[in-house]
Image (cartoon, helix red, strand yellow):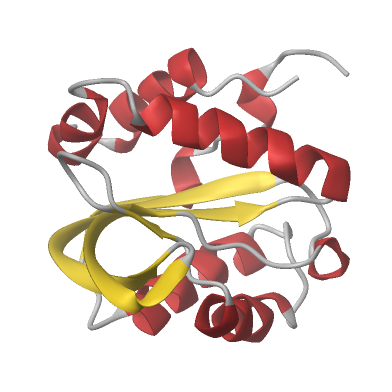
Length: 158
């Protein structure tokens, strides 16, 4: 597979500034963008919400809370990542510790069409989010093109 990250990130899949009442609202808004773009099936949003309740995806990062909700590949038609930068954080359960809530400001909703890529993209994102100052850069980015530039530079998926 080629190393072209443009196939993951699209400006019309970025919401900034985004306003959401809670995690379900954030997932629904971003999932709707993916659905309108033809990236996912109608079953995608309910499947992500259900999975999020069982396997939370909030990451306790130092600067800005981030969540990477996703679901099984059968709900996905074409790979993409929808990104929301929230004006006010919403709470997501912590990955591996769902009882612990994390205020999240950046939501990366993954639409992954092949299960073997899922682990790679998750690892790449987690690694990216550990880069000092990067989440702050994303949170303070002025527009979608700035956000895409950051993700394309740091998120390497084979």
